[in-house]
Length: 364
Image (tube, rainbow, N blue to C red; front, side, top):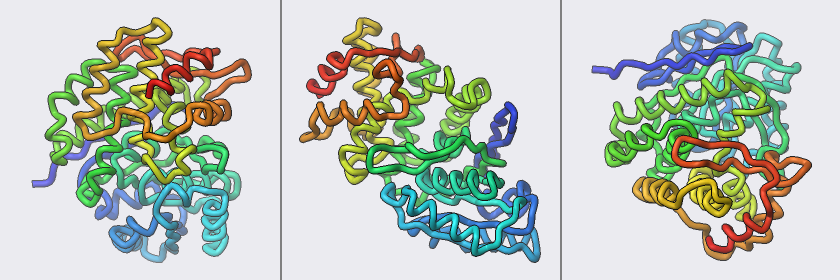
């Protein structure tokens, strides 16, 4: 018996629905429902494409006979999320002769979703994009909210646009093909929602850690739905990250600095965010905002989920701090961090002393 699908509605100026459950990539009606025109570009990567691209294209044509479907595949990995990769996606739209009612389908993890969404945002000043996330991290984070971007050598996501999707279809069956490391990376972003807004969710995750790591369908679907509901509510209230939405960056200022310093070839995004959340909790303690016991509990949960909880060896604190100065979350007046006053209670803090940040980085 197929598990029932869950849905989460995102409101605001451009509302859309997130569908969660197995079999969505094999459902012609679900895939073609958001499609307004007769052209579709399927953007994917070298890992995901061979698994699902043919199936998705066939189901789209089944639902819409005569649909022009083209496929563009990037090399898998963060190193492809560049202006060059973006230009190649634009070239693929041009080769398709995509009109204003064409649709980009982003089939893959966060890299594909970010780059494909950015291409959709820019082609003819904005065409539809449907997110088909195949990683847990993309399902609970990057596919929801409309933030699209590519990286520069100087930092992550420095060139991009806000472009909400027309729909998100999170087929949980695709998680079965994820390497265990990628599943754990996604769980870091799931933990984040408990850390910033829902302390009881941390208890729920702790009680179901083994089930989540074993890829239990019901546990994963519930974790995804609860995470998406949290993000949807925040995005609806603050679509352009002018206030509350910044809380979603808990751990990310540290995490992005780690990724950039490692040249996107060390810790993956979820792993870097896990370390970043531990460091953000320690910064909160150093600033007298939170108790050490809360940070320790967070560290223990992340470690139980198989995630790193300390800075990788060999990283220079001064260089990490330099990356943070360029981070898009920095402000003219100085460093800005998402800190907390305890589990489920995050806040934005401006003008954080660099000395305090360096102290946390040096302690590792």
